[in-house]
Image (cartoon, rainbow, N blue to C red; front, side, top):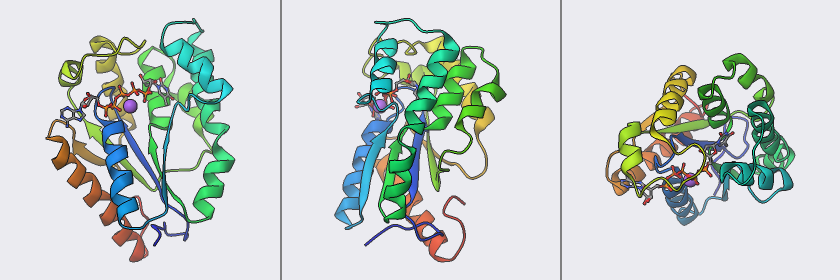
Length: 210
Ligand code: T5A
Ligand code: NA
């Protein structure tokens, strides 16, 4: 049993949102749900901290190293590009991917630092486009109350407010917005519905992202 997009490939399902919006919790739950239904599916995340580029990013995020804003932006992007062929291979073989953060994080976070929005988008052009983007919508103030920010570089309220503003600029009608302030199980159900709706739409020959 496979979730396929309209081209008959695995579906690329992206979760986005502010820090602490619940992306990892929901990605993990969605993985179990889809596996339980017998789908071939994998959970990926960006940054992928396991690669050599990812290790540089991780060190930067934990304030162990300093990098110029454009340099770190391009490293985040390179970290997606280095996984592109494997991503395409999986999708081609009918494996669906749940991806915890993607290009939208790249653009929203770097733009929030003051880098030019169009410049930030440019290196993302050509990466596989998601079939479904689920945005976990939370007020920055509410996110800040959750389990305490862990002390990584971007985990500061004023900065997260700017990130939220750039996510609003990036947002389009294809995004599935889910209220991330609901109880975790309620969000889980809505995420499941969004994925099932997409599969249905796809089977009717529409694109999976609408
Ligand atoms: N970044 C990333 C860029 O600048 N450019 C890029 O290109 C990319 C890809 C690291 C940072 O890198 C930046 C963005 C980030 O600042 P990360 O590794 O994804 O990105 O960040 P993490 O710290 O791992 O994850 P987050 O802080 O974003 O948290 P999540 O995954 O959104 O939230 P989660 O599921 O871990 O939950 C957080 C807490 O809230 C609770 C959970 O139990 C947990 O304690 N919680 C809830 N509480 C109440 N109600 C609910 N519904 C809840 N859901 C979760
Ligand atoms: Na996370």
